[in-house]
Length: 254
Length: 50
Image (tube, rainbow over all chains, first blue to last red; front, side):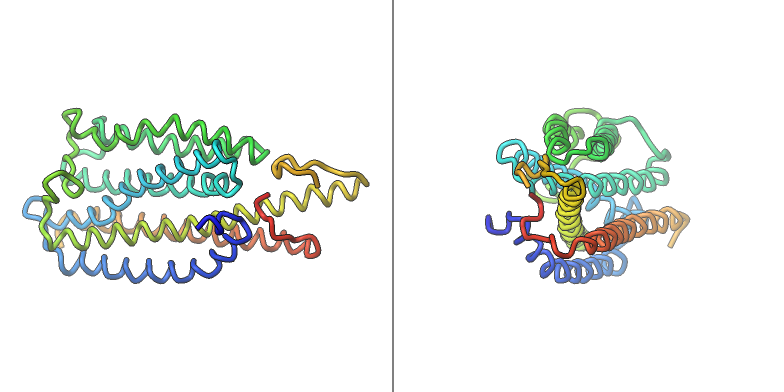
């Protein structure tokens, strides 16, 4: 496994794995959507609107999961100073922002017909909105600092500070009196959802996770190429000037 | 369906747009990077992220 932490080996692996992951994601999404629309019955209270849950719940799961991936990558950056950890952090932030956005919008589209309102400032919704803002802040931070290893360290610190929000999101429905319903899948005592709705939901959650892994691998591959381009551009500029250059992001003299 | 069909369609449409948007953005980024890297054929080496 550690062998693939080398960027060149990662590129080799990504080129071979990404197409398979993509097709597996598409196949699972097709099965999940079939279950969501043709197997799962309308809910006795929510009616057909329950169909929104099959995308809202996986998006909510990914919003937190991606932040967990970023947290591990941040540790890789700060503890081991590994360039692949930097690339993994940077590549995950915009994906996390998009999935959190999907979670918020689909939740709102479910809330209007079910709760009678697009939005309430309850603890669950607010903490997920805070997560979305943290993602946007991280994306902006990566754009602000030009030198990649400096940007990675700054982003890693912000990521580790923001991780306190994850347990708040998870337990907000238990700690406070919220309009958002408590956990119904991952809970002590087992899921409270009927099997006919549970399996399509789980398949959709696995498909969403594989989608993220596919996109993340593709985006990390791009980050590796971006670093290669930056390094080659600096070397070319130095050659033109007739001198040697220290590539700060590389941490090695060229 | 019912009178909530619009909400369901909107939720799936926005999700589909977001997913295709991410795929397209990453694919276009890769194409641009490959194009830019093609200017340095002799210099490409294996230690990419360094």
